[in-house]
Amino acid sequence: MSGSHENDANTDVPARLLGVAVAGGTFLLAAAILLIELGFDLPAKLLLFTAATASTVVYWRLPALQLRRRATPDQRDPLTGLVNRRFFHDSGQAMIDAMQRRKRGVALLLLDIDRFRAFAGSFGHEAGDSLLQHVAKTIRAEAPSEAIVARFESDCFGCLLSFDPRARDRIDRLADRLAIRLGQPIRFADQEFAPRTAIALTRIEHGEATIDQLVHQADLALITAKTRGDGKPLWFEPAMEDAMAERNVIITDLRAALAESQIRPRFQPQVDLGTGRLTGFEVSGHWEHPTLGPIAADRFLPVAEACGLSGDVTLSLMRQAMAGARDWDPSIILSVPMVASQFQDAWLAQKIIKTLTECGFPAHRLEIEITENALFANLALAQSIVTSLKNQGIALALDHFGSGQSSLAHLRVLPFDRVRIDPDFIRNMSADPDCSAIVSAIVQLGDNLHLPIAAKGLRDAETEARLREIGCSHGQGPLYGPMLDLAQVRQMLAEKRLLAGAAAPAAPFTSPRLAG
Image (cartoon, rainbow, N blue to C red; front, side, top):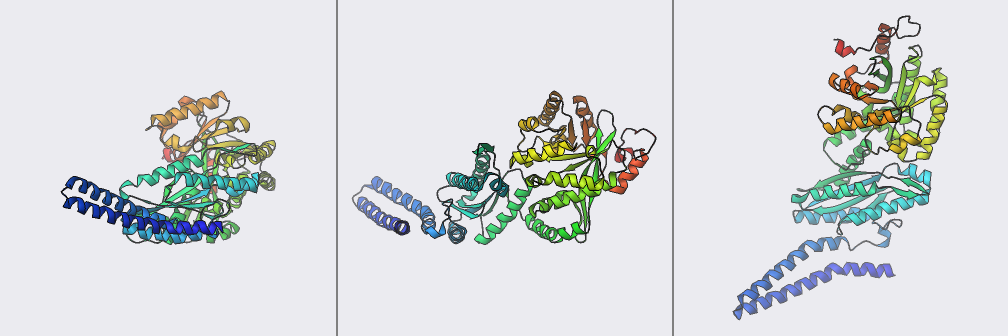
């Protein structure tokens, strides 16, 4: 009963405010007319100004109060106290209609907790509930009081608010604050966890729109933000509609492509910068899609991860690469990148070892690349997987170091054999002194830790020379030629006498592109 009375009281707020405003305005207007009749022009003008100001405030505040008045207990999420999606839809459309009449914009923020299911599975459902409550409290604290904040489902939240089109940066600042606050470490079960939230934004400033359209646009941007994985807020763009159409095609055809081995490995050479010799290849994927044409791994692998198929894709590529590399020179390794979600699979190490055994491939010729993003959801599980792989003689590389959540602690607690610098730093070394300084610092750190440092994304000889000068051990990238299929790799190795049984020593690596 108390909830019903509270709701009735909330329902009366706009009506009372409007009644008070009308009565007060009438009184002030009558008083101003009387003062004018008596010759007191200045006091009359002050009263008229006060009446106009009060009317403006009521005009702008009344719609917000009307939107806040209808939430009943059954329209609220019992865990977080936020309104539910049904209430959000109805009151959100009312906000859009009201703000359009007042020539104001409306923005929608969607927030999704990265790898929430893995977190809840590792720390328990009570910890998962606590995390949801923490996120809800943070959004409500940062959002304006008139904003509509809802829990949509599971770990997805929405925040709808109005803004002055001339001050759209207010929305950007809100999204940035949320990204920073929600990325701060929190402690559960005596373990520190750094949650990361994907944040998507869309807006309407002019013309008609529906709440369904805004939610659809924000959903598309959220998919892209989650795929990008850097935790930075992302605005919806019309091109995302085309990307979603492509994504749907990939989702539809991916299982059949795996079953029919349509996704084939591609190989990027890895070179010792000190000697110029070929030391290995990084394995990627390539899909000749019947309607979309050639699709590289960076297009289909994020979709596969979202569908829970990234592990199948990676193991398929690994199996094909191992089968083709058995008669390569024993000095040449295969380096296989793993996606973050694979390190939530407690059986990952066993699956990799089983693939090695089935292919008859030596464990010491396999290197597994891990990004630091893979370590944050469950460091203890990642440590267990890494230890199992190391015990089999498999090498480990920390990939894309320097980006995202880089932590020196991981270099201490996990037995990495190599660190690969994020390619963005390598590409920008010549133009950006800060990037050059960061790369130099990482190489120096590796030297102090007796840990070889490799550079990804090498594009020009000038950068290669600089990396060699500062002591970077290995390089890979477009400088050494395009991605190669298995037949092209075999041809290259045959020319260099790097197939098993070749008598001549290996010559320094020469890029096919540079050789002309």
